[in-house]
Image 1 (cartoon, rainbow, N blue to C red):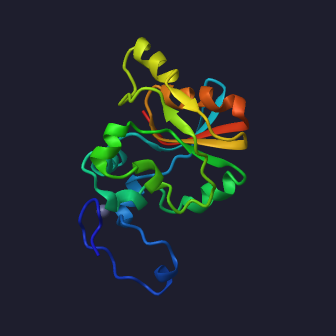
Image 2: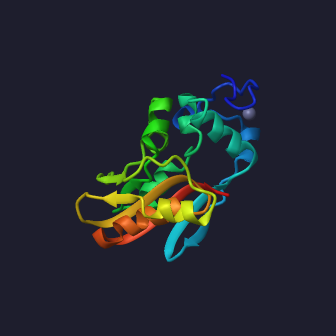
Length: 194
Ligand SMILES: [Zn+2]
């Protein structure tokens, strides 16, 4: 088997590794994609971030999202799925929606696929009012994004908002604004931040 990033041949499967989750990256690449587990605040919202948005993470995510390389879906939460399920026990996952256009282009929902196998229930009923594609760069676009989410699902106790990359934070904050009156406790989780 070859490393999905650098294409180097990986070591043969040993007896013990049979019992471990299979990594698509070789040891060297996995070392470069280091989990940081930063805690940041978006306004009042406590947010956990796993990676820096640079180097190997950036190219893997671009390849996954823009080249629609579905095979990469298990790279990002390798060895983190159980951690999330335990750390956020009792929470419902609420994905920040991607634009319909992008989703159709890819043919899959990139976030839901990454979090496949994380044993937490999913919250449904969040949608975008307008099909905006990405976070705007100026203040006007950002405030448009913040007001662009509407939650029509059931009331929940604990909600974990999940996104892939935080740029300005306006998507997560927008989702938070939409959900905060319908949930007792809200936290956020992002793979990376810029
Ligand atoms: Zn490699």
